[in-house]
Amino acid sequence: MKLLEVLNSSTSALKGNGIEDARLNVELMLCHIFSCDRVKLYLEFEKPLSAGELDIMRNMLRRRLKGEPLQYILGETEFMDCRILVNPSVLIPRPETECLVEVLIDDIKSKQLTDVKILEVGTGSGCIPIAVSKELSRLNVKHKIVSLEISKSAIETAEQNKKINDIADDQLTIVERDFLKMNKLSNQINYLISNPPYINATDYKLLDKAISGFEPKVALTDESDGLTFYRKFLHILSEATYKFSCIFEIAYDLSEKLEDLMKENSLTDYYFYKDLNGIERVLKIG
Image (cartoon, rainbow, N blue to C red):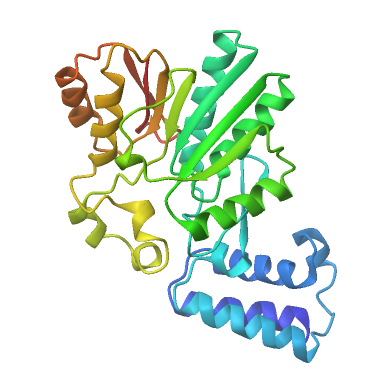
């Protein structure tokens, strides 16, 4: 079969199963197989696929028809111009998480910091600290990021991403640690950042199967009210000895509940930032 025939038949199959952006999905699969961009793909429409290439395409198509996210099928995605390897052990990076990185970088620039120490809780694929490290290097800001993660398989993926993005060991260290079991943090850090599991148990059951059926549950929900990690963060921050700032991604419906928690912990210096959709997505404290 020629490339155009494969493109058209595969697009029809995905459309028939109600998959959005069917043609784009197929184009990206074919680009992955041929290691080319979409422009070159369009110049090769008459190119026949080998038996091996057809087998790869059929396998990818079967997986997509079962609802598996395209990013897992391709094995990678992009986050803020960083190539990020992904698999079912890590959450697929979302565009809205870029807001967290932007708030952090803007705050560092506004304070004119030249040497920054950051603690991240729950690194997953490592997309956040990698994007932060790259931008701080571009700005000539010396930095040390320590990222905590409970999943061994996620750590392996994050280490791979650290390597392919040329992040030095003295800039980013990934540590296996259960943050919820920690009682103290270093007061030498400037920032505590996190995109924690914030989907509550009820909403998790309502998630699209493309998410709950493939992405790691531990990265999506605390299996409670969605506030478990924030309670821990705020309890630690309420202790007078801690002077660092906190920047967290939050769920679309958590701002009022978080304000109540901050009042309980006598925290008044905070601000909610909206994402591109006008949704309160990031909370900065301090």
